[in-house]
Picture 1 (tube, rainbow, N blue to C red):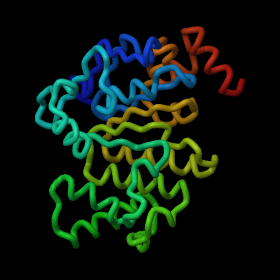
Picture 2: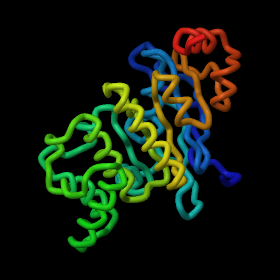
Picture 3: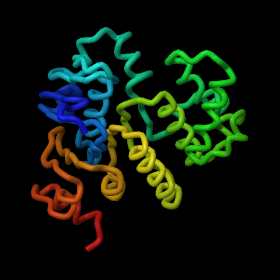
Picture 4: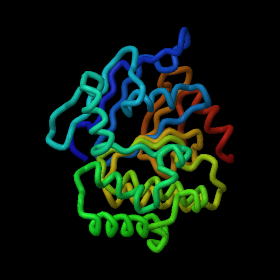
Length: 258
C-alpha cells in the first residue's frame, strides 16, 4: 500500500424523501485493500456503495479518486462521460445478480471481450485468446467461450461476470453481495476465487455484504453501518472478535457461533 488513499469519501449523505439512507459518511479505501461494509437490511450500505461507485449522486459530500497518474478527481464534479470512462477502465462492478452485469444474448467470450474493446483492444484473435485465458482463470472451461451465459449455472454466471470485470485490469472493484443467492458449496469456492484474485492482482475492493463470514474471509477492514451512518470500523479480526459498539456486538453474537 502507498501513503495515499485510492478513494476518499467525505460527509456523504443521501436521502430517499425524508429518510436519510446515508448520512455524513467518511471513508477511505487504500491501494490493495479490501473493505467490507456490513449491516442489516436498510442500514444504508447499498446506498453508500451507489454513491461511491458513481451510480447514485449524493445529496451532499464528495468522493475523491486518485487515478493511475496520481491526479485526484472529484468524482461527482467530473462530466458524466468521464465517470463512464472510469467505470470501463479503472473501476469494476460485480452485481449480486450476475445477469445484471452480463449481456445474456452475447457469448461468454463476447462478454469478456467487450470490456477489452472498451479500453481499446481491436485484434479479434488477441481478444478471443484473452477471453479464453480469463475463463480458465475463473475456473470456466475455455472450450465454452462461445456458449451463452444462459447456458451457465448461477455460480458460473457469477464467475463469468468477475472475468468480464477483471479482464481490463481495474484498480478498484465494487462488489454488491457477490455470493448472495448461491448455495453454500458454490459460495465457498467463489469466495476462494475472489480472495485469490484480489491477492494476486493487488486489487482494491469494496464489498457490501450482510454475511459476516464473507467479510471475515475477504476483508482487511470492516465498516459497520446502522441507520445510514457508520457505528464502528476497524481491522476485520478486531471488529469481529472484539466488537465495541452495542449494535456490532449484537450483529456478531446473532450470526457467529459461541
